[in-house]
Length: 416
Image (spheres, rainbow, N blue to C red):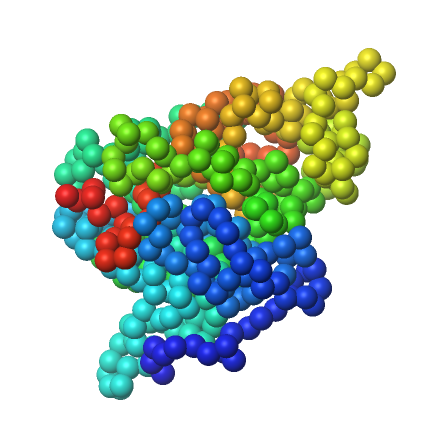
């Protein structure tokens, strides 16, 4: 087998939970262009032939891109002794491989012509469709220490997330020099992409931690609101318009490095859920904890999912929405208008040492100023009713450079 153009017959076109209809409308959003246009709709139908451009010259894909069904997220450390020149070459090779795999193509021969040849591509995604694959690179604060001559070249706001109220962080689930995020509507396509990139980086980077996510838990533009493992709709009030992205997500500060302008700051939190405890609570308690009902997803002060919550509504002398409910504490109205772009995924790691379900939410947020997340989580970590059922065990922050133009690579200016 060798790399060759793929015909439509090789692409799978399937419909998701919404039924048998196939959606083929054009995608229009900041952060990438669909080469084979398709758009998820309220029916959540999927077109696995959809492919995104890597060389947008603007925002990296995988941020504002409508969230796909599956995630592989990997944090990596750069091996001691690696030089800045080697790091530069790695970024160039990764960029080329990302662009290739996002087209649905292998990064080299899957089956070499010589029997003693080693395949350049591992092959598990060969003959599969692009499946809306997006690949996103992040740079951690530790990359800008004195190991690679990059000290003083980091983004202005890139600092480790401070310890926050209620944190139960585990060191092995935190931090990292680099991050790779692969999102796709086929889990094998996403896995293959991360496997291929780590293979290219062998000898230069090592895996620090990884998360396999399924069932997107945040809504994007034009998408039906998904549910997290608590059975709740998640992301009803997520950022969805270009105007909001410009205001809250994309870095535009002229004091930031040029390679960062058009990028964003990525914050991850691995949040374990006490699922067995949650499953034993009454639905009334679940409603009060979140501030929304479970079936419709409507705020307790309203009837429909997208009704604006009325945090001043009172019934029988008591607030209809508890001021310490998750919705009340996180609402932009109660945080000076602040918003973040959420892109979370559900995860499961089997059973924990107590024989209970080891599962929860891999929270991902993009914002132009990480302090927005820190301020929100300080508030939530102190008094959120949801804290009784969750624990933050992992945390990391990364700077996400803007996307390169064709002929360039990610964060190229960093090495100038």
